Length: 401
Image 1: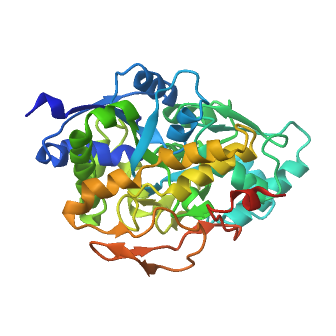
Image 2: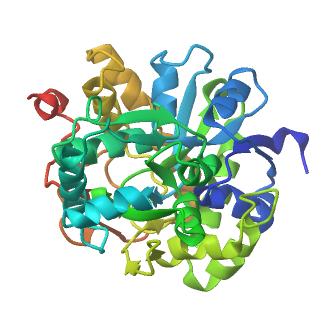
């Protein structure tokens, strides 16, 4: 195999590293002539730093991170692009058993409904005489931070005043909850299920209910490396797409869970990974809730890097005071996601390629066939639990009070 097609990629121990792991372990990268070398890290800060100094060509990456890097929001960061998404959904919000009891007393329903859970949390906080609870997210520029804040704010909870938000690496969250260091968290799987199975917490809602068909992780690629190695990048994208197809087949989920469970990957019992793959979520109090599209690795254009996803993350950076709104910053955010590279790499496979680079988020209330080249494509339902619509061409209107 040509040394020119070696790719060094970092990842964190999470379910949504599945495409990278499957691409290596099931031979999809090798079939494209790519020697995919995976390196496990424990924090997103480490991924950032090793990308910046050239240790990694690419990485499993929080979807807002390439945008944050390119906007200069990280002091040590390389110019980064996202030519492929690593799936939709996969996160949940988990709280301590004490906080869940307080929420249940305020009418929280057992079905993970974000409206019921948010209303109950708001009322529980109003009834408390102590300081607001401490919630953890994995990084300030993460889907977790933005979706947690979006959910809380839409339910009448001020995420800057009514609660405290802190940063904790994903694998440490269940233990931090059990130790009483935090009262809740938003994280990717299997670290919600881990707390539920251990009896340390109760899952109260999911990303796929807060924002249906929502982005979570992307393949972050060094822009300099991508420009210097276009053929290797195309080969990598094809291998990852084939891995996504394999991960999306229900019959493969037990094998996928067994592979991910290995110490060099997620390093957990395989049973912790199966609920997210099946959508049968064990909440932590003996209840199992069926969640449609909890984690979607391939269908519904799950690997397509929509510019509207990038721009929604940018809108939240503005909303929460991380960056000022400007045409220049909007352009940087938009150009951080590269559907042109996705199309170029995958066109030869004849797979479904969306006919547009962006879409109105929240416009599809049911599964809907949409314009595409290659195979036929069905998208939706998508959108936010509070019924809001995000038009990427009208960001100012979206952010207006």
